[in-house]
Image (tube, rainbow, N blue to C red; front, side, top):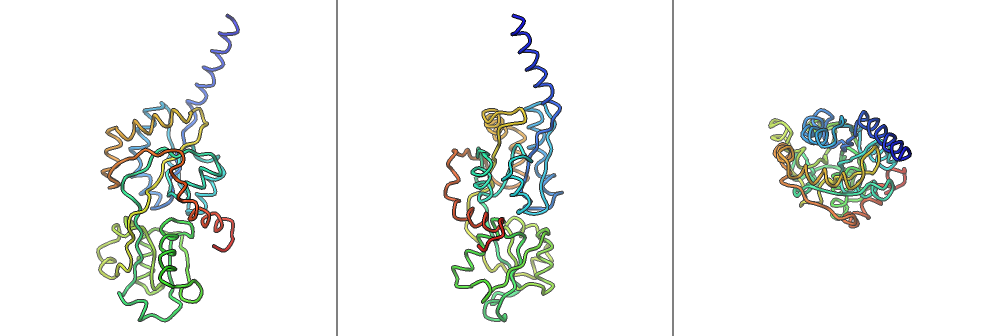
Length: 275
């Protein structure tokens, strides 16, 4: 009896200690830190209520830094990231995918003229946010399919900056084309939009992925239950209204396997190898 009481006391102390530790949500830097924080308040508030613990919303200065943290598996309890980086987090750090959005990711390439390929001297200067962002990788794959080779036809540069900065880079003449996600294009000012041309707008690709890692006092089963409850909650509906991502969809553990080729390219770039 005394042994049972001791075990219960130890468990109670452990739970009490975890209750003081914040849960850490890592969100890929697809927008500015301010926008990320504002648009994920409903996720934060719901999980604080669900687990009775403080929740922190965290990001990184760029996709490469964020992915490295995810792949180490120590910085975040829950992550929300693009499918290529989600694949790496699952296979390198044992995060498990649970949920995504029904609205897929769309990429755009902007130019100042519709005939940029004919009117501009090669190599074209193309700017993106990060070499392993899903938008960058998918746009580069499309340009390669069109026969435009890096080095000969295109020179890429990357900027740790928000989408509106890329718009300025284009309109100022510092780049011939820029790559960004479609939602980020829609956030550009009307003045910038009036000065640019949508050279390419991709079909929808898989959306951002919610993945969790067991630890910090929370099991995978508890994460699955929490995310399922969030998807059906008032907070979940408010989050979808803000983000315009339509709805939530559950994922199986092997749902990301089709991302292996683009994830392999991402990992090579993270390691400093040629893509």
